[in-house]
Image 1 (tube, helix red, strand yellow):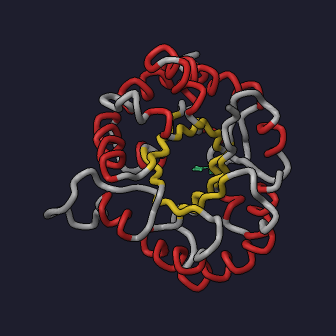
Image 2: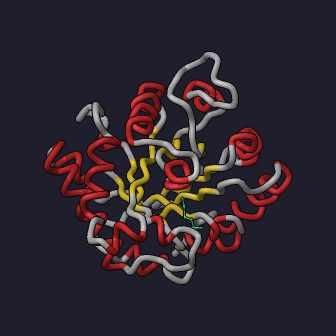
Image 3: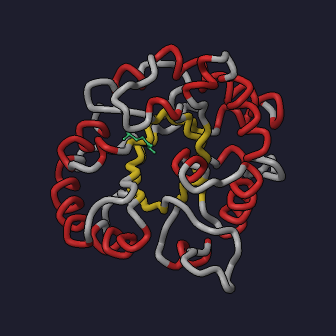
Length: 250
Ligand code: 13P
């Protein structure tokens, strides 16, 4: 069965409530004819409620950009899986490179979050990808496989296929230096092969794997032509409704 493409907006730390509402109002008519793919918006946590209100009765899916793994307690500044569910989130981005490299998140912490998200009924979008110096040292495959190995530890074979993986090479994020279609294809094939060897063919065929890193309306179609690339995780180019609509209708 063909996998349904997923085009996801990661707004990072951008927009006010009013800007989020204006975005959705302008974006929705532009994607009205889209039926055959999933469209997801991951706003910053304080804007999740506003986006949920604005998306009502639309096919837009809702996700968060991060969460903590504990359900409640003395964790000042953190947001729990249950809180995201309560806000009607369906997805949560975990292990984004900005979480790893700006906030020091480890693979072990990310794995706890992955397991907690699944337990709460959220779909994790697990991000993996190498840094420039790792690519230059030919460590790309090793880094990706290690992040995958530690990231999905303990995830049952009955649920792995419903997860989403995003391959986001760190050097391609926000730099305008997007990975070539071949490099994205090869990394994604490696991730799918890992899932195949660990979980079997039906999970490997089912799991959606996205590319992220300087995805723009001009290069989206090139990625989507590649076998195995199931969509995009988009930062900068998802902030403008016109641009994100072009990405969705690639
Ligand atoms: P850019 O699209 O701005 O490069 O960001 C990619 C990204 O990090 C999405 O999660």
